[in-house]
Length: 276
Image 1: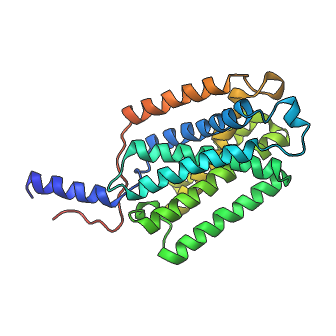
Image 2 (image 1 turned 60 degrees about the vertical axis):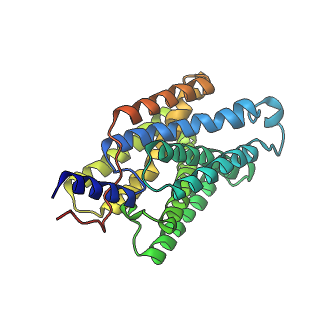
């Protein structure tokens, strides 16, 4: 096969897959992005909109979380629309959409668990149900929830809905574990250990790779949430008292550096055969 034919094949193959290959670099950027989602969401709802000011804490209702959810929700919808219309995988667009989903997930989870008054357990269970329903609907409609099959508008729609629910669930779950007495650093250790178990299962067993992916994808969100809270919460609450905007800026620089330095390629579509 000629080089030009091989290049044409690779271009066509890349166009099929709209999401990145699941590599170590993918998980590093994913954890950084979920951490940025926590600090970025809190920057808007708590630092700029005053959700944690004395006046807000004394009020039975404060619109900060709802306003933050609306802001990031509009941004997320716009980026998903561009992502779906894109002809091939674009690392910058993909990770911008992931950051928007995790930031919207942060504000939405805080709205559900705090403003609606259902608490962390209630919010976590509600959002877990949303993730499971989304995965079930995706499977019933297309016969698979394998992320490597994400190549068209229907698959991408299910993909981004499921991801947004999982990001929201992760925020509530992270807050729940941290608030249960482990603190933010303890919560980060718990979720880090859970991810290590999943990695061990991946390398030593034949458990469904699709199931392991979604379990890991969900667990990276509470890991990022607890790490983000650990960075910006006050010393008295077990954090490092770092400025939320500063933490968000540092994380943004790290993400950009990782995208530039770590391999970013589209995933392998299961329907794409090797060239003859």
